Length: 140
Image (tube, rainbow, N blue to C red; front, side, top):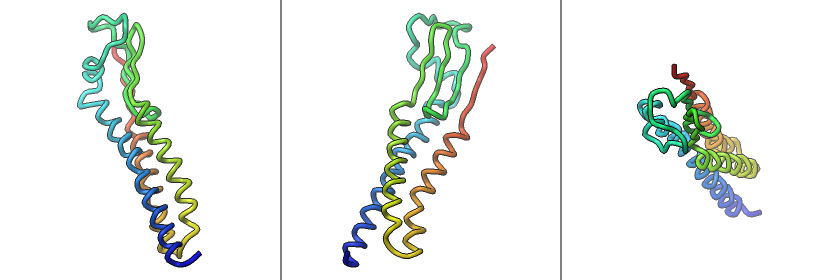
């Protein structure tokens, strides 16, 4: 393979790896916006499941979840969970980044390898932020 084709292939793979960071970032942001300023108020403001009457004793627990990256509102008559679409997109983006990075690491020297690993590092940091942002609230 010629040097220009190798360089072009590396840049394309790096671009794909960088683009695959965005779904993970969107899931991280979505987890925070689902919780809102007060996670209990967010549950009351969201759509209530069938059979739930809006009074003080119907909401049992509230949780900011890691997988899916969203909010779980546990009501007496059922529960509501947010975040599945963004979490699935984040998982797909992570898989794409791992595969593309594995191919991109075959090209170039040490400096290119460090740059190639940056999207994976960003994805790992974003998954850690989602994991560390979980919260569980029991309502009396």
